[in-house]
Length: 88
Image 1 (cartoon, rainbow, N blue to C red):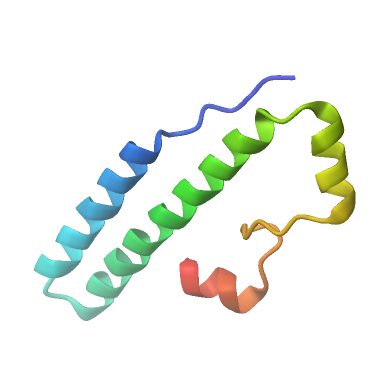
Image 2 (image 1 turned 180 degrees about the vertical axis):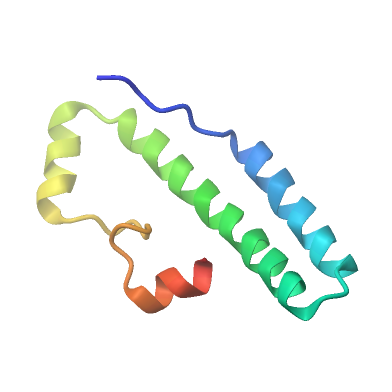
């Protein structure tokens, strides 16, 4: 099984800052809103990547136990629609 290449948390933080700067200088209201939404997206993505990296380091038995208990990690896959819309 191949692993997907994940961005480093520092790269994601830099992208968030870039979009926040764009939001500050945007003259169009909709564009400014879009940039702010993108700036909020990258920190959430960074948290998911760190949690995935932590889970990959677990022994298989511990990972299986967590899967059976159900994930408490917020993600786009298990978030309710309103949470998903707020982040994106």
